[in-house]
Image (cartoon, rainbow, N blue to C red; front, side):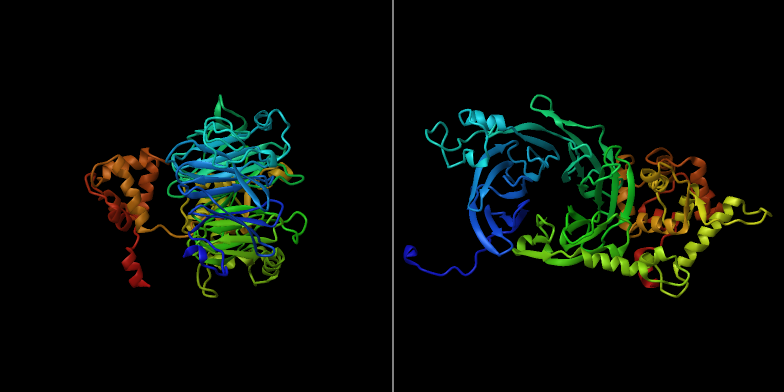
Length: 590
């Protein structure tokens, strides 16, 4: 008989994949939520299970967030239900509000504002919405008594509609629930929202931004959004990634003393970390990020106790296996970042402890939680040791970047080619045929940067050229209010390493690009049709520029031999026009 069975509990775990992992903002409390609705609270200092709660069986939690005040936990479900729970102590976790904004539309992301009065969410419809907490509504619901904390809130006890007695009555999600009011949502993205991030501006106001797979960066006017006006935006949506590249996560950097501008850091699918001015949304810097474990999926600013004053670090997790640290400011130095294999598969949850001494990760389907100690001093020592090395003929500031320059060591290393091209660019600026004495001051005008990049095999788009030049031009503006019009060798090498793609153009990318032409052309495009598109669509190439490029690729005779009606498919374009070898041929050659 089941009721007569007696046993000893050996292990308390989950019966399904862990979907969310949260850390209390001021205590050593960890909240873990599984896809089956099991909520567990742990003290991660003493490894003690504090409590277990079960959400309704119809729920399938897919997102969660802990408020910075430590009072509220929001849980988003696949069915579109959003539940707000109160955390009133280590043994008390009760539901105080439940909203069903759009049935069947899963709540994929949740984020609280720094003052815990605003809750943002993203859903499967690519929309971003807001809830606001109003203390006066709590007082009205409790007989006019002033709000004195979450302990006084009514809690859902399974009470039916209009049933007498204490407890929270069920609702359809349209009325205020214990002070939480739904403001609305905005269709700010055309593809899934990758990340929501709250921050605080230099003047102390809340800032909310989102990035999505459509390449957009969107900022929301949290203070002016209301039930009547809905969710309002600040300025226009900003396209920060183009083509097949898309942002994967973002973080609003905390304001520091003496900061001249608010900054947003984003990570993209090409392993780049990009720093934007939060007000103008102009890219200030692009840096190569960690390249192991796939693109970054989570990025948080880490406050640590053992770091020097003014030192800042970013903690990250990838979609599969890896978590790690990156030291700020970002410059692409591989010795200023680290990563380790935290789980054998996906990483479904990731959070730093309240004091920054630990990183806690969840493995999803492996149903395990790992606690990692953080020692930023080791990362500091690694970057300092790399910078202290000396290599003959290499500027000291470039020594840490040598592993990132492709080519065999000590056998005509590509660095020699970079130096040759750089000095040739200086000679071109003075005139190749001049008989005057040559003067090399070690600087190259910014106008020569695109030519140098192309000489090294990196062919940036006009948008990328503009961003690279703007990065150098305004690199000293925040400190000296002066712009820079020339670049030295060390700056150029860093710019090249950080902006070039991490992998070359593949046959699949060319094939996908040609598939996009199907929106304009039926069947295999002819040369005259492709030529018209190259001259009119996207970053259009003037006819003379296109003719010059094709003459250099094919020779004068080959260019004149292009018939207007000649079919040009992806393979023909790659092998005959661009001169690329097929992948199988390259493999045989190697």
